[in-house]
Length: 542
Image (cartoon, rainbow, N blue to C red; front, side, top):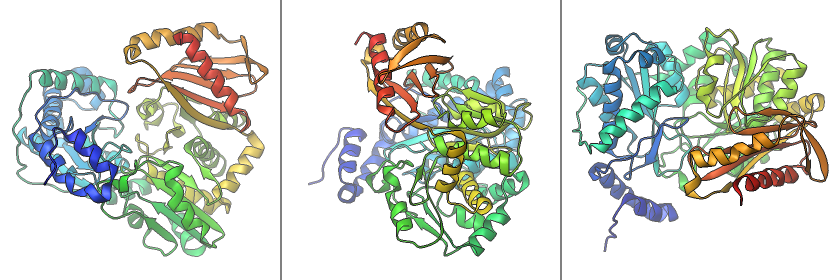
């Protein structure tokens, strides 16, 4: 007898408990997605609106959010138009919108709903099909489109879908845009609107990968020909884990087929084999196995998330998270490629890059968490242009490149590093650390009461910045440390006299306080974590 479910969440829970056995329940999820008309609270976080498929991410709710965007565009609000980089609705209609998706469940169906509503308003559309986030960002510029809608929740688990909106500069939408979308969409949700589906009259398709390749060649930050020659002529192996995501097939298009490049998990799997498809240390196991069984002198392994905006590295011996790779990228681009500018990093990122930048006289720009905060340093018109912009959560972009983080570029840059230095990434990293110092970053956190989320939590945590001012001291692991620098860009970050630091900030999405820390030895991490937790509990009265 077939099992019945009251809601999509319970169906997802059973399905994800054994994805091989319960894969057939996707038909139930589709039913919920099509029939459920319950409104949802729309929040555009650091990278768009995300929701569970069939629960809050439904066909009606995606039509509501699309209708809210259309209403926003039709209003011709000056602050919105300025943030969009357009003069008004007439220009938007002519330049058009690119719509596509990653390879999540129901992605093409959701995209057609969006396209139909835009076409109803005589706004030009391009259908990109399955594509990565950086391809959308480059495609906007190459097509001179007004904006793009990319249906992806990035690295979230299989039960999620998402909705990213990019204006005409190709970067993540700023708060001037997202707050207006939230305002209109939530008003429509409160009215419990049921919006009818509109079938697209026709689909003008665009191949974003070809445009992306042209974009890279035009920008000239990396040397594709040098990379191709390196792959062809060198005793090397590159292993890429696509984790069933939209990055599959992209590197073949960019570099060509080669027996020296191995690809993992390229087949369709809406459930990602039951794992969270993120570039984590644990998920790197398949890549490391391939590299351990190979005999090539130079080896590179990477794992990329489904929409291609996050990446993690290994050479088979050393895993290299973005905290380290971003610093390596700065060193490589400045020292080996002679690119000048600033380094942009989120405030929770390792100070390894600070040590490099200070010694090389490169200005450092620390921003709030969220890649959109790098925009002032990534625009072609910026007076202070970033050599590299990166965040500890595996996202990176580079000089004269997209305003979105880009795993494809991150991979190509790593290969060019090997081509130029003749070294594995772990060897290059050791050389840099020997010169600039060793740093050991990590992160953790604690759960707090739901009642504290928002203003009350911010108020309680604010006492930390008042209590620990620059020049004050405290004990960490039996040693007295002086607060050398206090940074309050996003939470409270205390940098100590030995270069170690801790940062305490509330999560923007969960009832948690997050700790970001960095010690100067592997053994020292525990003491810094304990200090961050103690300070937080004191501030919260726990």
